[in-house]
Every structure is written in structure tokens, then in C-alpha cells.
Length: 289
Image (cartoon, rainbow, N blue to C red; front, top):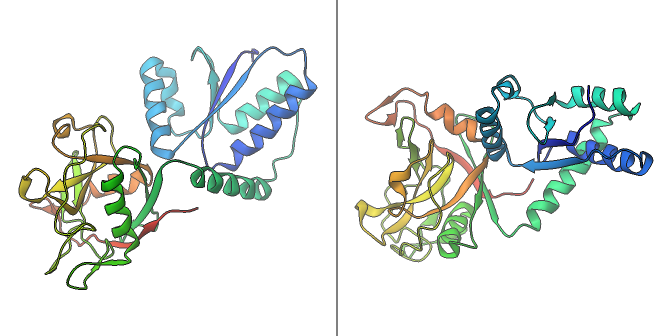
């Protein structure tokens, strides 16, 4: 194996990443003569997949590593070390470096760092769980771009606000009533509500159309009967880029974890775009690790 500048691509919550941070810091202090640089890049689950996809487009050799996390490769993308074990071997061969991986300890470090990262982020995070999987879907909301839309969504996720008839506004028990294959899923409808259906009353305006539908996993507001400025509680999540939604619907966040749960909806049996077996939100709220 050759010595070169490497990128270590991982996800925020991985204990392996915290372990490698320690190793690289140690190497930097011990091996003053080594000029190669190691850069650690961490992404959320969904964005990690996007980066891998872009790497495959640039170099087909990345295809066999599409499910490898973390992944180590050269900055020019022409040399692929591989996954975690392959990189440890690379360090042993090139630097005679060995350090025990205490997974329990580094899992705790990763947990605390992930929690701190989210707490210090400018974004809001929420999660909801469907009855088809124990894995939560985690959303990053762009409250800096769409503060009013985000506030409405967060408050309904929290489920602590009541409308003018005293009915609790919550996404819990809301059905995923529409799955447009390869396009989007739709949910968030309050059935049999007599009172106002959003945090601000009956409807609220289209805040802006800054966020584009250029990747899968974008969340946006569904208009009431297609009218402008008629947002309530219903929302959609995209399964593919949907350029036709740009400038029409307010997108205000993205999926950062649990996207595979959304993809599983695409495979369910449905009739007239509604899943044959009821799919519903069984838990929702603000997210913390």
C-alpha cells in the first residue's frame, strides 16, 4: 500500500470515527516526518449515501464499497483503502501503528459528541416512528430559512398544543395515506377535526421556496386543495428529486436518518396510492440521541 493523503468518510454517530480521531492525533504527534494528511469528513446517514453515489459516478471502483462505513480513500479518488479494518491494516503496514479498539468506550464518546453536535446546531431536529419499523425517521429542519413553517411542524410533533376546539394537534396516529411510487409519501392529516388544523389557526402562508427538491428525503408542506398560502398540517417526503415541486410547495427540511424506512413504503402493496395495510405514525417529537 502506498502512503498518500486520505479522506476518511463516516457518519456523525459512529464510534469508529471517534477511535480514528484519537489514532490520527496520536500519529501526528509521533510521526513528525510523515507528510501525508488525513481528513475526516462526517455526514448524516442520508447525506453519506449521496456522497457515496457521487463517488461512484466519478470512479466505478467505488461501487463495491457502496455499503462500507466508514470508507477511506485518497483525495484524488484514484486509490481506495476500504473500510475500517482495511484502514487499520494500512496504518499497521505503513506506520507500524496498533491501538486497541474499545468499542464500548468509543460508543459512549460518540454518543456524547453526537448529542453535543445536535445541541449546538442551528437546526431543529424531530423524529417520528412508523408502525412498520422500530427505526425512527429523523428530520433536520431548516428553521433558519423557514422559521414559521418549522415552528408549526415542531409543535405538532411535540403534541402539546390544542386548537380552538380543544383538540390536540399531534402527528401521532396520523396515517400515511398516500404513496406515489418513486416520487413521494404523504401524511400528517388530522381526521375528524372540527377546529383549526395548524399551530397558527386554520392555515398559514407559503413562507418561501428557497429549498429545492433536488435530492431524495426532502420534507415539504402540502397545500389545502392546492391553493396558495393554505398550509395546515399535511406534509410530504420525497423518494426522488422532484424538480416539478420547486416554487410550488414549501420545502423546509430533509431526512438525515431512517431513509430506508421511507424506501420500504415504496415496496408496500397499495390501492389507489393508499397502502393496503394501514401505515401510521406511532411516535413523534423533538429528537435527541
